[in-house]
Amino acid sequence: MKKFLILHISLVFVTFILKGQSIEQTLAFADKQFEESNYNNAIKTYERVIFFNNSNNFSIFFKLAECYANTKNYSKAHHYFDVSYNLSDNDSMSNAIIFNKASLYILSGENNLAFIELLSLDDSLGEFQEWQKEFYFGITFFQKEEFDKSKIHFFKAIDTNNNSQKEAINQLFIDNYKLKRFNPKLMKYMSVFAPGSGQLYCGDIKNALNSFVLTVSFAALFIYTVHNYSYIDAFISVMPWYQRYYSGGFMKAEEIAENKIIKERNIIFKKILDVVAFEEVP
Image 1 (tube, one colour):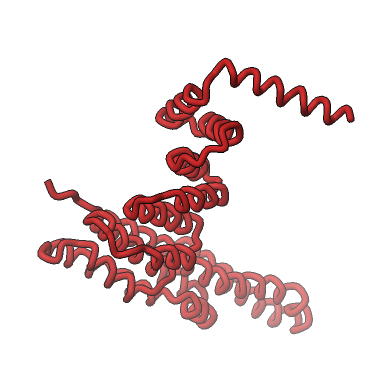
Image 2 (cartoon, rainbow, N blue to C red; image 1 turned 45 degrees about the vertical axis):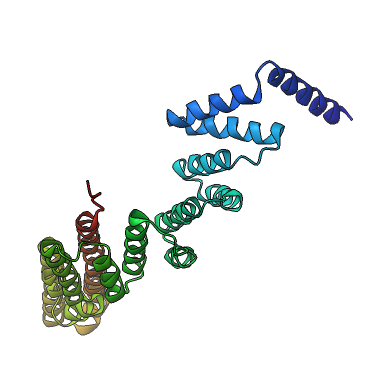
């Protein structure tokens, strides 16, 4: 009973406050917060308008979705984009919402869901949205490591008469294909047979030297112990250390190769995005 009275009093108080400030004024304040990128304040105010006005205003839900997207609350952003999509009576705006949802999925690494969103686009796309579609498809396929499909869509997103763009994209994909030579399993087996060689092939000289020196040193110590003491002494005192650095070396080679591919691929990916960037025709 006490909790009910407190809740009732709170609602009465809020209603009293809102009477001093019209819905229009509250909405204007929310819009101002949105324009000034004060997204948390905008969220609270937009949701207040929706709660007390039972609003079906497309603009409110769309801006609320963008607020949540900018605060990285993607689940809420998706919810309000869905609401605004259902309220939209404009094909161009509906497509814009789909692109917004796809971009959120891409940012969160859910590329399959982004792909599904893009498939729901209708055919009424303007020049920019047509470019955006190919651009987003190129991104999703690249992130899914389906590079041949990615290349096709990125080519569709550039001016076919711009040879320098075509050559740049083609070269970047060639550079990406070359990363296969750093196959993590291959680097691992290289270091199994020749400690440090996998790291050296990846360009990590420091770890290559560490692996080689430590492995060879303990191998030499093992032989020395066998020669001066016994096999049992060598196996008990030296072998555990040798195995640790030997196995650690080839496992490290695999990790270094994986990290190198990720790093180099990210650099290539950013360069591709720069090349394909939309340029509005004056």
